[in-house]
Length: 381
Image 1 (tube, one colour):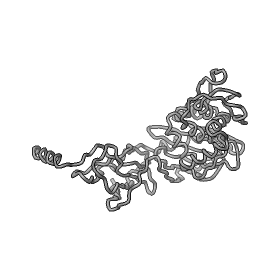
Image 2 (cartoon, rainbow, N blue to C red):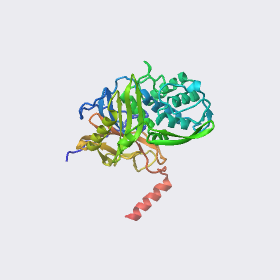
Image 3 (cartoon, rainbow, N blue to C red):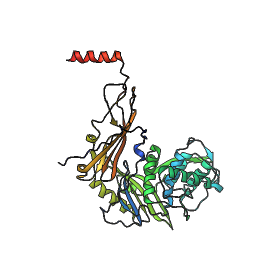
Image 4 (cartoon, rainbow, N blue to C red):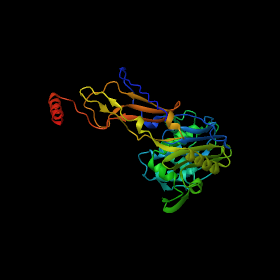
């Protein structure tokens, strides 16, 4: 077996503070041609946890994305503090052409109900109603959409409408829509909504029971599908953002302007689920110790997230790791304290990244505790 390369870059000689960053902030791009070209203008397959791109075609091409826009509108809506507060909607605010959840003038709803209406039946009325409630107007809401998109890292996107109806200045990329989906799927309620085939709710004025049906047929066609959103306009054509999970591996697939999108998504998932295997990379995260000022014993640093990573055959043999530790750590150290970071690379692509933290609390070593420690050590001998 080939010798694994394990490169430790230590910051012990540096006196500048090391910036702490989370696993979720990583973005990796690795376009491949490991599968024949798919019949879509733009397409991407991304591994959910790491953000690694497994397949890409025109992934940074700016294109209209139709109602997949509602992934962002729903995410913003779900992050509102008054999600269950009832309010009245007016037709002048929510009226829109195209798909609808069936809102009527002066209906009484809450924001969560509108989220179900945006994702399942792709309600343009629901998206507009949520936008006006949150920001006062669709124009103001578009400013919030662009601000949120930039924070997520969607640098090649621009939003004008909350519903995704065509506008020359409303566009995104397959890559941006994939990283948006990574962010949205961190929200448990978003996950629940986008994987549901149907949903019953009581709404209206007076409230009546309504059943919403999900346009995403992949949920029923493909057993491992877990979401997310369809889209179509005359300009954008068929757009689909989906997710699937199999054998502990979760993937995102995005196609923009793709005629046979449900079939292509299923084929891409089966191809990459067959090629990938979930591997334990604990050997790269073991025996990482840091010196703690005020203590005569090193402190073990452990990964915040389990090092379980989907890999291709024989890929593990050529991995390398980079460890960055805080230059100075003073006792006492609380359990869970940030100590540094570890990155594991496959070639030039980061496939795993997480914080290193303290597994236990470390006290300051006083003279009293030092004597007690020596006494116990001698007793053992």
